[in-house]
Image (cartoon, rainbow, N blue to C red; front, top):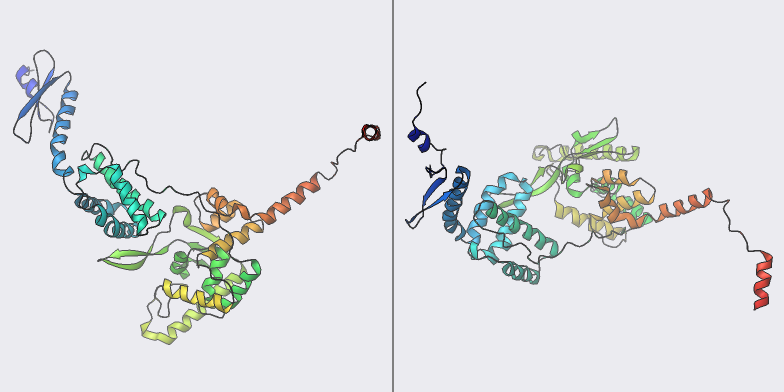
Length: 401
């Protein structure tokens, strides 16, 4: 076999490795030309160390051109690349937040001059607008993620938003049931005289979210097994610079669920099905078929604002205090828990990710269950009674007095 020359061995190097060559004493010499035109070199023990040094210098040379752009330029470019990895509804939220809050306050700042106190001031100014703490935390998460990607891409040496004083997340707020059971019954009875009555009925019976109710289709109803498959949500998305409503996957993985309903709920759904058929007959060609359980008068998804207005009128007619539509979900959870439905079952029906979420929100409402538990423990240990003190002890105590 023909022996390969020493010269050909020493000059071979990996692709894109740069100017790296071995020396006669077994070390490796690396050269790199800076943007200024100056050529620098270094001798290192191994080829790996030489390649790492070369990559570091090349990265440092790339940094000024990218790090000296404005934060506004950077975050718009970041969003363009990052948006393909997130849900359409989330992408809509990101775009609104970037244009409404982040760009007006930070777009002019050069990327490598960002620092923590700048973000502290930015969040303080947002509170004065005012912007809510939850929204500010969301804004901070977007900023932090964008800048962390800049660090990962070696554009910045560290994340300047680390440690910024964004509002701390408060402990999960305990929810109090806004109506008692008698008032709830009055609400449902009054609502059933209104076109959105079946919608309110299902909301208070199942605890479904408004977006889940608006996106519910007849194909999701299993009539034989009396089951409802919640597998989509109606959310706002941004298309062509305009906000539109479209169907998306549920809020979380656990929100995709199948819940069982009773005979009376099935009857109400059958009633709603007949009402939809009447609507189709009335509007004829104007009907837009979407297979929705709760459509608008022409078959399209219901309007959230119109639904809220009708709900408010129903509350007034029933002479009940104003509550939000979302409070129907809290009512459903409270009633189920107060009547002894196991926590895990309620967690599943609501589509919460963890039982602790349900417990933290509604755990203080287990009053009826607590009474049942107290009576049960009394019955179990009913034979255990305190032993009275001996008569001699009592007489001795009286003598001392």
